[in-house]
Amino acid sequence: MKTLAMIAVALVALEHLYILVLEMFFWDKPKGLRAFGMTQEFATSTKALAANQGLYNGFLAAGLAWGLAIASAPVQIFFLLCVIVAGVFGAATAKLQILYIQAVPAAIALALVLFTR
Image (cartoon, rainbow, N blue to C red; front, side, top):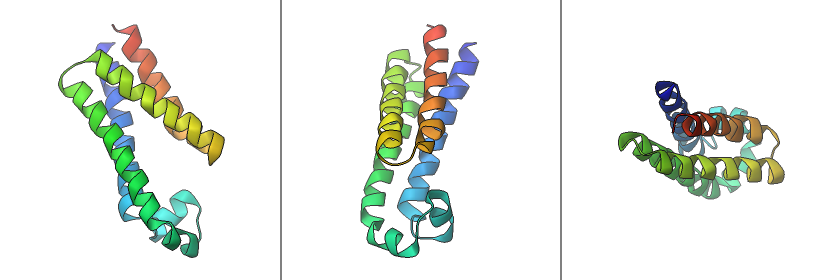
């Protein structure tokens, strides 16, 4: 079960690394436009904001990877809670789909980490 928890945390970290790439490098490219449902004009005008947002997603991924590397449940729990809060806030302020893409996987990983403590 501990292995399953580690895999779940790693998947959440990889998801946030992917979001970093989308937001920092593909925001105004066809892949980013499709992923976030934006017009080219909007993407161009918000590119710097998206890069900043992508960097924060990278910090979440780095924190989760750090928690895995040192096998620290408290570090994993902290960063998973950060992901959940970000997902809930994103769902409330931007798009409900963020709840299912970001917060739910993190909540599942959190439950697995807590269950294996």
